[in-house]
Image 1 (cartoon, helix red, strand yellow):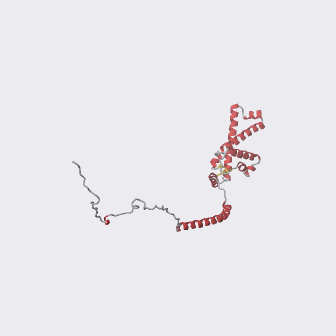
Image 2 (cartoon, helix red, strand yellow; image 1 turned 90 degrees about the vertical axis):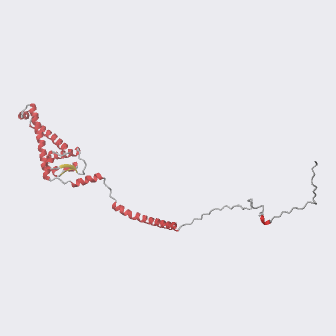
Image 3 (cartoon, one colour; image 1 turned 180 degrees about the horizontal axis):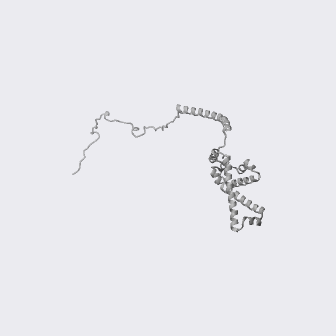
Length: 237
C-alpha cells in the first residue's frame, strides 16, 4: 500500500482565528518584575544632634558658682587660719607625761613633823646597826671595850666607828628609799621624783650624801632642801 498524503495547498487552507479577550491577560513591561526597575537604596545614616538639657546646664552653672565660692572662701580661710594657728598652736604632750604630771599634782607635800620624825627613826636604826656590828666584832675577837680602846686608841676607834656609820647610813637610805624606809613607812610618807619619773638609785644616793653632809654643815643644807633640789626628789604624803 502506498501511503497517500492529502494534497493540501496553501490556497485551500483557511486561516485559523483564535478567539481571546485582551482583558484576560495582564501584560507587564519586560523591565518590570525582574528587579531592573528598582532604584538603588540610599544609605540612611542617623544623625545624632547633641542637645544640652537644661538640668546639665543648670548643674554646670551651679558647680562653677560653687567652685568660685570655694576658691574665695579658701583664700579668706588662709588669711584667718594664720591668726588662729598663731593663737592656738600649743604642742601636745604625750599621754604618759600628762598622766605623770596629773599624779604629781595630786600628791601632797609631806608635813615637816612627819619628815623629821621619819628621819629620826631611820637614824636610830642606822645607829643601832652600827653599834650591833661593833659589839659583834668585839664578841668574835674576845676583847673587852677598854682593852680595844687601849690597843687602837680613841681616835682610831672613833674613825672606825664613823666609817662604819657612814657606810650603813648611805647604804640604808640609798637602797630603802626607792621603796620607802622604815621611818617613812611608819609616818605615812614616801620619796618620789619631782617630775613623776621612776625613782632610781642615783636619785636616792645623791639625797643620802647631801643629808649626810648636813651634819657637818649644822643641818643648813637640810633646812634649805638641798637634798631635794640636787636629787630632784621630794617627800609626799
